[in-house]
Length: 504
Image (cartoon, rainbow, N blue to C red; front, side, top):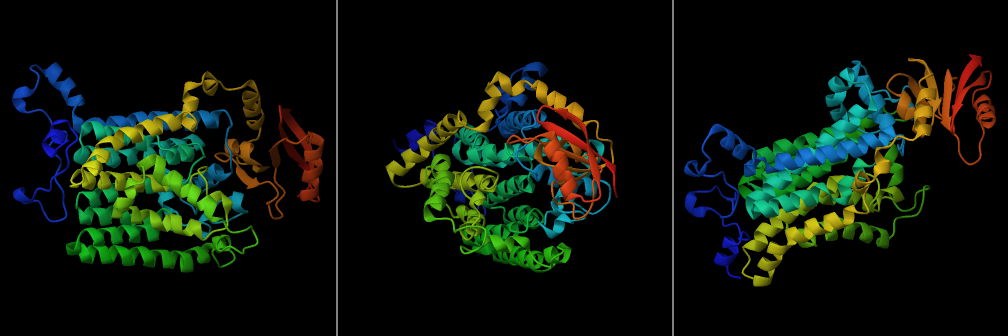
């Protein structure tokens, strides 16, 4: 199909607007890019005109984001309400945000009594959630905020794709991004600070594609406040800017220097300063000869890389320099021996999704202008293939649970456990494991089971397993806290709550 035919079919390439004085490095929309209808084509009357406004192409990314938010939030909240929490991470972040909300330090007792979380990971961006949490002190607040941030990141992806590939293909890639396995796995795994990184990266790379270098730098720079390793990612965005526009050299160099310097200061000064040991705990996870396990093999790394690139972009994203923004995140995982950093589970791949999808958009726009017919044909067909792959994979991913009636039912044993945990009074100190702590952090001082460092808590709340009994839990509590005596306060299903009846 020649260029004219492709354009008429809505598959045309984007043509740089040199004749209209487009600034160097900045692109114009393709001939079939979405535009509002001309005035003489608008429906007569205020009612039809208002409805037409709601259907305007410029609103497509926001409508999609709203639908994604509803899906993400529903999945997260139902998972929490049915006590499907899988780790202590939600409790850790809630304790940090609770500290900020009460105008104090982000103390996370789950990491050890009095531990300042800034000595573990540098994520001061969490302070943005403090006002909302002060009004609504609940883990549901964090989960809802995460769903909103994930959904927001789809706006620049969809908008950029529609601008350069046309409305239909833009929506297709927006849906593929929203349903991508990296986002679904992260939404299904509690809350993490990387939720803030997704929209920042997406808006930064959108600005790169559009040739708005100052905006790209302004969106990328705050990544240093999300997590300590993302300063290098900000620097990588600066490298992409440098590659795309030599005239933006001062901005690119400033971002590269800022990102690297922020990372060095954070790892070398700030985190050790807040850490009781004067170091950065996660250095021990790097290298292949650490005590925690063998180095990750090439097979595991290749498996993850193929999952990142193949079902999402068909490897075409490799044609875009934007993919360089993914190198830092993949790099520190390559040199780590921690098995959780690889594979498709957990939240570690979410931050890669905006990068690979916007790299795909950039590569498709370039391919649409290629003199090679096969490449132009591939560019025309890949958005449909990407959304088809995302829909097919979703049948085996977390969002598929939204189609199952059981997802919306709260089991009676969960209701009973809720009533039992509600008997723990506000302000009490509690030693707990994963599932009980998610119900107690917002109103009590919670320690991780076995890590109270000499503090005898007022209560112990645990979930039984492996044939353990309430009597065994009581005996273990006495062994952990010599001089304190505990009695069974209540049981519900496989949950047990102990109350301290004597001792310090």
